Amino acid sequence: MNGKNLTIPVLVVALLFMSGCAARRVSDDGMAATGALSNDRVAQQLAADLTTLLGYRDDETLRLARTILAETDSLARNYKVQPPALWHNFLVNVGIRDRGLCCHWTQDLLRKIETLQLQKYQAVWAVSRHGTWREHSCVIVTASGQGIATGLVLDAWRDAGHLYWAPVTEDRYAWQRHPGDNGVDRIRCR
Image 1 (cartoon, rainbow, N blue to C red):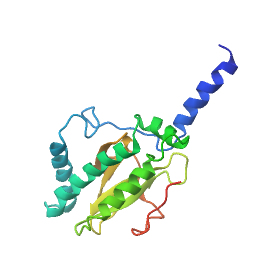
Image 2: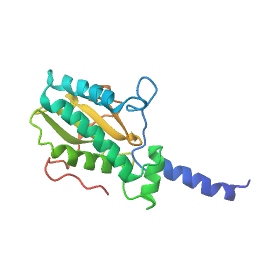
Image 3: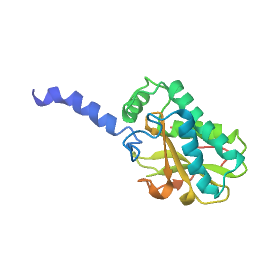
């Protein structure tokens, strides 16, 4: 095979890796956060982690956990997610899929969380590597009035529609609140 025959495969691979949101993390036990677990068990695990943000269990906790998981599943179906996440990004970037970039997941999940009108929790649009081609977005949930460093990362993009969550301090990304997130008018995806 000569150099000209390699041009197209090399370009395809380059496009995949330059599609933004270029990361994948699997949970400590080697499976995606929602992997082989039942929905109720996953909701209970997420609720337990949300409880640590408040220091006590509140009526909002399980409702928030179930809403986040149900919306993640709904968005995965609506986006017609094709794993892995970088492949789906490629499909969006070339116009085969309409939505499914990390900013879409963040935007749509935040909209759903806002409908809950939470009192004890708040959700913000967080970003890592802002302004670069490797920019990555997610939702961070905290106890109301707390900074994002105390929060829980919610990222449905990483595992192509399976919710990943972890304390901000344990995540491999350096998160900050998106500079354009004012809590009312959310950022628009490109």
